[in-house]
Image (cartoon, rainbow, N blue to C red; front, side):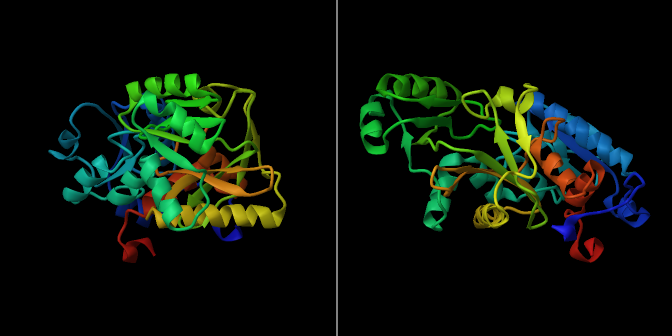
Length: 325
């Protein structure tokens, strides 16, 4: 990963040419999704880093109708730090694209696919990439048949939420039916998949390259919202603990997943490893968290990339190729 690293004893600064090319940058954060609180933290961190790097940036807490954000824009491009529905699912991307305003991250279709855990798994499956066996669940009455088909334990997920919101581990028919009811209160699409027992890894992607993988462990049942953003006892392993060849295999799988969804510039892919050493794709994230607990900045730091350089590199991909060269 040496081609990603930037070694400089001085605080990172964007070049005057880049600063001029960027113009005025709006960092969109907040939003109305279930991930609003995390988005505000991510947005503030991104904003501070951009300003520290010398970029003319300011923050916008996006609330209500997204169309209003482009009515009379006082900015030249947008750094999207909105997590969840509205900001990460292609909606905002479509609005900005239609208005001709450059924005960070994946485009409309890739954003929509990655945000939809069920349809992204259809893509993985169709492309021959390993992902746990799964089913869409539309009624609690299906619990018995699903367990006969998939076995236990199972993971129940609200298909359009991030940050592990609306995820439950279940072991029997009664738990599955109850988890479905809870997930269906959050989302109209519920995904059920086989639970993979084993270590969890996450691979961050930056400009079509994989950053060092991170191994995750927690005393929680799984890497849930509290473990991600609140707990101080979540354990992160960098190096991830895999043999070098296995880490390369893991990174290639993450890149393959990102590419088949059509994602670009930056993101994160979550992967499980089973008892036989096989890797299984869970999901891709096109606007991952950028808080003090977040994994992309952690992986970038391990590759020698400061937070300031990370956000500037992400923003740089909003420029035309000639300017970005």
